[in-house]
Amino acid sequence: MDYTVPANRRAEIRFTRGSYVVTAVLAAGQTVTVSLNFLSPVVNNVCVVQSIPAAPLNDKQQWEAAPLFVSAGDRFQIASTMTAGAGTVVSAGGISGVEYDA
Image (cartoon, rainbow, N blue to C red; front, side, top):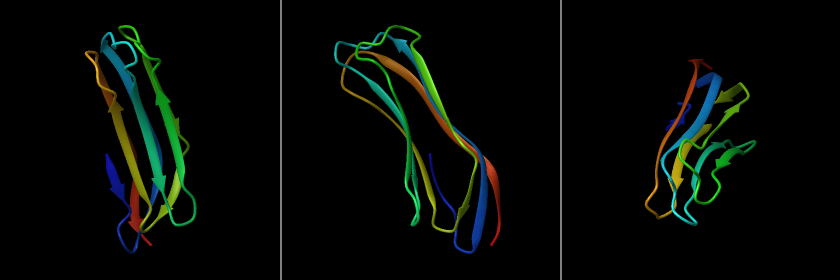
């Protein structure tokens, strides 16, 4: 997920969440990471969850970020990465808010 507040706009981001669920046991040394990167000219913020290596079936984690008021050019990125191995996961992330004229 990638969202940048457009020029001449502001946004109230009320809800930001990322999560994962292991659907097939991760291999030895294999991990999954779900992260939020909030990039702003004023402040940068990151929320991250990472599995243990070789996480078992149905291992799950999630994070939620506090509500934010953001300005034009501020950017949200939610990404999920998994190291090489035989395991599988389902990951998700998203934001909810209201965008309005600056």
